[in-house]
Length: 163
Image (tube, rainbow, N blue to C red):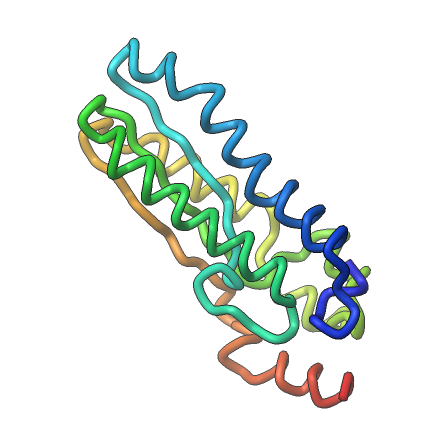
């Protein structure tokens, strides 16, 4: 989303991001929970974002808030549904090489994109979580590439270029 900061973000833009990233997640969880309660088992995996755990300028307030909301939604499932042997995990990836990364303002270089995690990396983590015994709940997994742009200050450099 191009208009991601308070100076450009409209109420419609805010509502669109919240609807997709948070409300959409809620509706999916709500759709499966009754069946999981009946069978007394189930695993929900919600994909949040590094921006949900570590809000940043680069991602903007709507994205930050929606992804932080995913963390609270996941935690709420564990608070309420653990008694039904239902567990939920929030996967919190940083620096994903997806087609969307090239559409952001001031996208990273191709060299930086080559060092990012791939969707398959997140899929492997999800597969690992699902394979664990049902009695074990992994509440949250924060994952990043070894060459972590947030830790290396690359986003601050991008912000300097935007200002």
